[in-house]
Length: 210
Image (cartoon, rainbow, N blue to C red):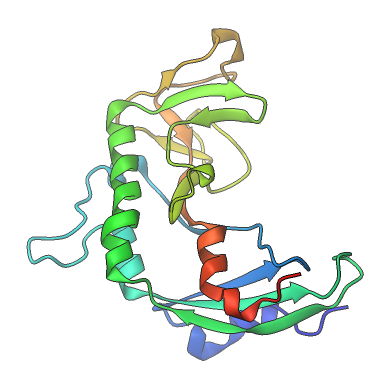
């Protein structure tokens, strides 16, 4: 049973303007949200050509423009009991949030620059129990944002799921673990994500902790 429909929030005309980024944030009964917020995927070759600011000190990089010009609209839902499937999914409220420039030009900039440096040095790839890994900043690094694939399908060839790297990637693992048809020139499409813990801290006052 659901007390409010999430889909209706995305159809509010006033909030669908380009300057608003709408995100439904789902919390479980205990007060934990598992999902991070994704942004559009980027082209590797385009990203490394960007400048964070232009000559007039205005945002120039796509990520900087997005963060500087957008207002986040977090619509909060929380399950009313431990059993998510049987519990009511209660609408807890909406939180508007403008990213502070201090965070944009420090923590977020650092991850953006690290991503460019990693691409220009050649992304490191290896296999572990969860699949192919890389040395981009990831969710486990506990930063404001991180980098990971935009979709669940991994690809290292020239197709719609990957794009071309500015510098060939470097395979660190056993050669037998390298993906079939692997090309060091291509890598799975990636995008920046706003970390779920960062979102949780912003909307904490709307969530009940059990």
